[in-house]
Structure formats: structure tokens, C-alpha cells
Amino acid sequence: MKRGYRIVCIILVLMVLLSISFLCYACSSSEEDTKYYIYVKNYVYDEDTNTVTAVLGFTTESDKEISSEAVFDSSSTQDNVFYYKQTTYISFSTSIFYLKVDEIFIDDIKYHNDVLYNNTKFRVDYVTSLKSIKSDGKVTRSGKYYIHSYDATNGNMNITLTRRYANQASWYGVLIGCSVAGLTIGLVIALCVKKKKDKVREQENA
Image 1 (cartoon, rainbow, N blue to C red):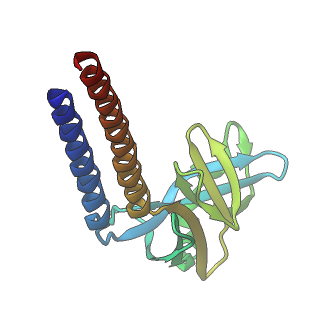
Image 2 (image 1 turned 30 degrees about the horizontal axis):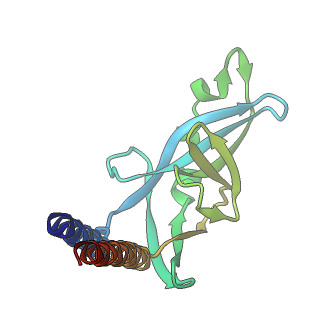
């Protein structure tokens, strides 16, 4: 019985230490500041409207031929005990693309699959693998990715993204509490059983 008691105690200690290590990692992790740029990543064609659209996407590479810097500003607030709400504001200018429209929509781009597309437009796509991200853009799914699309106007643009995510500290605290409570109950039951067996043994030896 003593050996079993020691094993249970060791398991309890290991679970608590493991939970604390996860908790410390969750609290200490942070994202580094990264510079983002928008650039022409591809083109899409609409035969019904005879329109070719230059799709602007986000990248961390600054060596694109035509690009504009995008500023990301994120902040988080506590939604409740177990969740946070993150809001990300993305601001950028599309003026450079409109100024160089002739360089972007060259004849080889307009003439596609034996069709000449006379109408041109720009669109901004924010692509993420997180379903939890919400926005006021048009959201479509492509495989495991979610695409938030916006019609690009000439000038400054602002995009707002929101995401609800778990408060890891609270969840790990619950994990620690449940682990301690569960094993404590197990110990109490084991001690009660041992006490009852000892009492029966004493009565048999009397």
C-alpha cells in the first residue's frame, strides 16, 4: 500500500509540474514585430463582365517589383475568464497600384485564353487558416484556408479582423485544479479502503 501511495504522489507531482510548465510557456510566448507588404499575387478573370482583377495579397518580402507597406496593429481584451478577444487593424495604401495600372495590366495579362479583357479592377485578399477570424469582408473557403476579400479603392484602406481565442492561463489553471482534485479524491478513497481493511484484519486477529 505504501508503494502505491508513493506512486500516486509522484504522478500528482509530475502532472502539476507539467501543467505549470505549459502555463509558463503560454504566459511568456509573444510575437515579434514583422513588416508586411501588399503586392500583386495573381489575376482572376470574369468572362461575364469581361473583367480581369489583380488580386493584392500580403507578404513579408520587401523585394516585390510593385508593393506597398501594410501596418498591422493588434490588441487583445479579456472577453471572459476563459477567452480573449483580439482585434487587428490593417492599414495600407493602394495608390501605387493605380498609378502603375498600365504596368500591372499589360497586354499579355488582358489577353487571356483568346479573350481580350477590357475591364480592370483591384481586389485585396487576406488569407488565413483560422476559421475563428471574423471580418466585414467577403469570406470564401479554399481548401484549408479562409479568404477575406475586399474591393480595393484608390487610396488608403483599412481592414478590421477579430478573433476569439482561449485564455491559456485559465485553462491550465483548471487543468491543474482538476488534476489535484482527482488525485486527491483517489488518495482519500485509497486511504479509506486501507483503513477499512486494517479494521477488518484487526477484528479477524482479535
